[in-house]
Image (cartoon, rainbow, N blue to C red; front, side, top):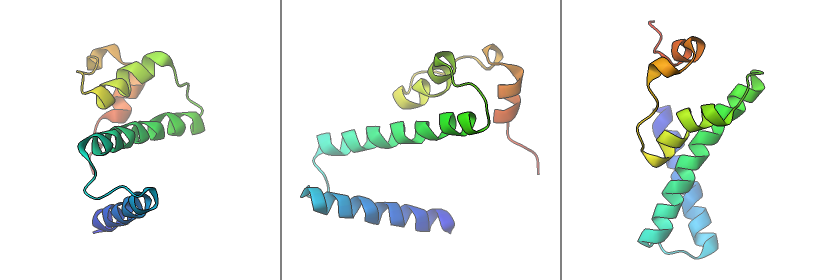
Amino acid sequence: MKLYLVSLAAGILVGIIYALLQVRSPAPPVVALIGLLGMLIGEQVVPPVKRLLAGEAVTVAWFRGECVPKITGAPSAPTAARPAAEAARDEPQAH
């Protein structure tokens, strides 16, 4: 339920921004695609910030291996190429 409320709130916020920018809704295809690209990039800002707050290094290699594939849709690097600590952290935890 929380996910639906957050999604609704985000939609309302975007609607307000569209109204302030005087963009009709639904947005023209180019505007919508640029907005989706912005959302993908925005999602990728969170992991490096979390790493920095945890005192871990954010390297170009890490960004290319973890973030760029999610933004571009390119296949990600093989799991074996990542350090064991990262692979263990990304695996789902049994509850």
